[in-house]
Amino acid sequence: MISELEKKILKSLNENARKSFREVAKEVGTSTTAIYNNVKKMEKSGLLQGYVPAVDEELLGFTLTALIAMRISQGKLYSVYDKVVKYPEVREIYDLTGEWDAILVCFFKKRRDLDNFLKTKLNLPHIERVMTHVVLNVIKDEKRAFIEAL
Figure (tube, one colour):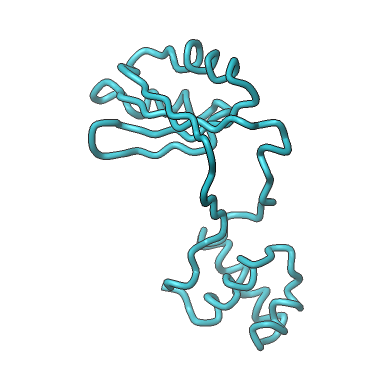
């Protein structure tokens, strides 16, 4: 479990990860040294795994988001995952229970790119079936951590 100070630090960094340690210290009411030490501790433990900018994919030309469900031959999940995880179009992979074994969240610039991805890159041994859903509208896409429930 994390301390109350760590929760406050995470909440502050969640709002803006580019804040200086001095700004975070002022906001949470402690010293810059305490912030530095706690952040380094959270990084070392793996709780904080890096700092990345929130990017609008559409402004980069990735206007097509697809959710691709995969059914994979029994016992072959990880051999398929080892290949699929390397594809830059694949941003997230979820290992599931139920009818489908995995869901991929993928971004493409054009419909032709999605078509090519499905017919070439996902034409792998042990992928028995795929079902593709094209996202029409994104209602919520929250990148920040869910700190309030801690």
